[in-house]
Image 1 (cartoon, rainbow, N blue to C red):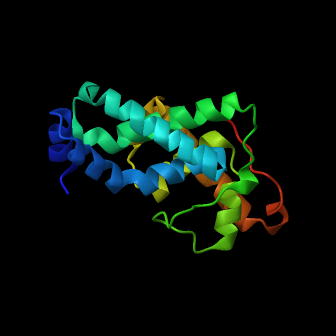
Image 2: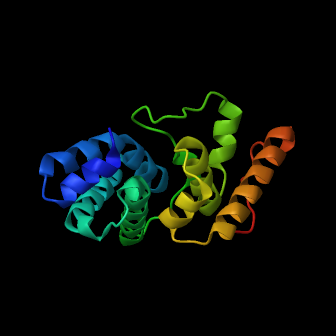
Image 3: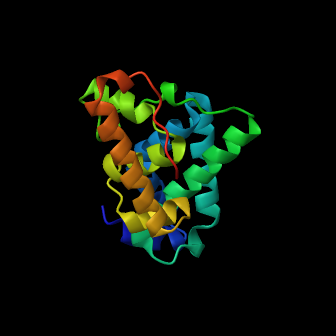
Length: 178
């Protein structure tokens, strides 16, 4: 599917085109919401709100090829709103990838190490390695500078390497500046 063409159709009022685009990215978007909220119902709510907001503001998207990045940003914002509204701190130990999201963990130690990253570092790792976004796309999705994305990735990879190479640290949370 050519997302750019479908976005243009949807911007022209073609509702089935919008539905097709959402079906194409839905599981990745849900996975991102779940990685922040750690709750199926809250994740579904965030995704539903994000889809509604996207539909209402679709005409503001200038470049249809950036649809997925744009949707990630909306989902992240909605997920953060729900987390704040529910006055709940997100615990990293509840992290998992539901619905067969691409990039399933094959190494349990890596899974545990990623779980222990602080949220800002964890999110950039997920976007980069599980959803294959580039630095520029991550920057736009998170509304942060590209240099901050690179810094978070560097620190997250360094923490993961330290964690995986030092058995004594396996149970300790990974912390770092971001």
